Image (cartoon, rainbow, N blue to C red):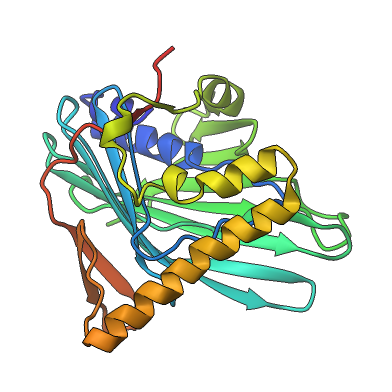
Length: 306
């Protein structure tokens, strides 16, 4: 889906492809699983075909994650910098995901800026997790913009639709609506052409999810000690074997190591610096990041194509 964003010759078709890809980044979250709280400097480096992705936890308090992904074959670059800010409203925790997401189609000279929906963790009347809120996708070079509203059922489940998405695609300069979107992001999303009235299915979640594969280690020697799978390997093994006391000890060991490293840095008067990103603070108190490399190298962990 990401490759399709750069393949269409028509800028409107490219924009629609970006909207579809944006929807595809959502996954149905699970409720009640043990949290893996990312530690400072934790990384994840993975490749799928010519797409290489590198993530790094660039701050622990507050938790901030950075992502850089490149595909030299398709001339695509992704840069994300995101901070989760939880707020409790009495019946749920709303995790506001702050920060920018950029998708660059390098050969087209186009940059698509977008934000993330919030993660809603509800405790009453029934526990559950949903994506919620407004997402805006904007491309200044093509004068196109999209507004998406991700919703869920009401508090008592009497109104709304589970995992719904509604929105529109329009010209930024004139505000003229070109297409209307409606559906459910975990099922199908349709697009109505305002000019012709024609409706088409532009996104099918079943096709997307069925094509997902489990990443495998292609080069064990190339896996960094900071790789998520390495940092949490003992905890993961203990959880999968239902050894809860061992899992607790493994989690505590990772966290205690982080506290020890922090004490060592403080004793030497050192400030931790990310390995793969240059980090700056924005005027509104947010975070911004720039990758230190132009292209992400191939990873030792790969996602099979079939």
